[in-house]
Length: 256
Ligand code: PGA
Figure 1: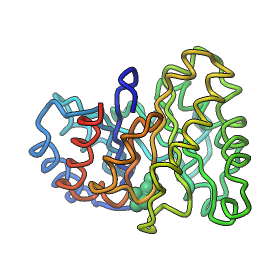
Figure 2: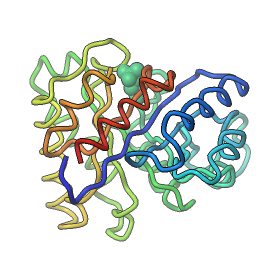
Figure 3: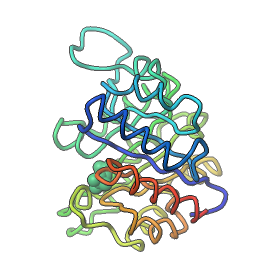
Figure 4: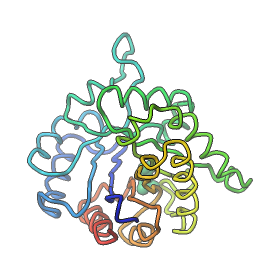
């Protein structure tokens, strides 16, 4: 964490929460955090709950994000959702290239690049996710993999898009496994990503917030956020429960 980069905690609910469940969770979270949360917070419910959650978040500083979008603006793409549709629900953010999208739904680096541009074109802040698998880490390919993912999705963007961009480093072996990366492992990759962003975009690249994701909990968040280049967390499982998620947000606020 560095004082020049305000911390962000994002909650990725994945395919969890019906609308009534989403409403209860958001009400509890607002009760925990009040209208002025300790850090920037972005909630990413499923598409179906976006409008309802958006209404509840009105008047608070908590922001709303979608978990995905289609790369095209409109058309015959049954079952898909465009950036403008997402934006019209009240979203300010969208996750792009989450490893579950890449692995289970075949999203290539090129597709992630197209979606990143589509998000920006719709006025959204993309949270571009990247990270290596366990096999890639064991073959010492972590740096090469995340560099390739960054190059394809991000380094070709126009410089004026960079202030709206966020990154999430999520080692695939840490997602949903209970096996968090060590603070040193996260810092090493975050520093590498920041150096590449700085090399391409200068100061605005160095200011991009880079979140860590992968089994982050209220207990592990503080140590991760104490690292110089960890600017926040992207939280899956632990974002489904208000008290724990609020503790992570407080840890981020305190690490500032
Ligand atoms: P997890 O998920 O916190 O449940 O590991 C993180 C993510 O996939 O964004």
